[in-house]
Length: 282
Image (cartoon, rainbow, N blue to C red):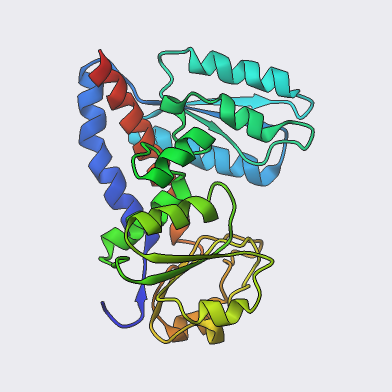
């Protein structure tokens, strides 16, 4: 591996999208236009931006984007009804419910309502379980992006000690499972981990998924560690202190331009995968 390798997520994302173009063309020849439905509940400006970015990425690639914007007063039952309608729509191949939803909605119930074959964002417990066991079709997109970056840059996981800082159900836990399936030895840390800097210092691979700006410092790292920063915080900063971590690492993802673009490209890939599954079933 080159010294001080900056892991360019845009380059990886472009590689993923180039690979999708001929697959989308074949689907269209068979009369299938891959289609992603995104659901936004409420008016959170960051969520609206993310949904717009995902929709625009779909359309640039020739994937149909159906955007559903529900008012913040929407009830859990009303949201579930919308999801059920999309589950039953044969023209929709993927469903994405933008997180977070307003606090009065049972978000987990809404996630669980998404049909497994349309769970392209990897949010159902069924999909997570299959991912953990090694045969899930659609892992959560950010963990999938981290694995894709590692594979693109030939970063080996086997035999390495990976430390994941964060345990969310759509990032920390699934990326730990994916790395374990790649024969890494995985330590999953969180807000109640004692002596966190000492544990991080043991890592060959560090995944930052804690949701706190510049939380992980360079002096926590072992010399030559690979740093994959899945955080995105106000001020365009990640979960690692970039400058100090850059000095100690052998490879690091920037923020922005690291994991984020690849996450969106994996969502597009999963949508195309789901459309191809439908074609195979015909």
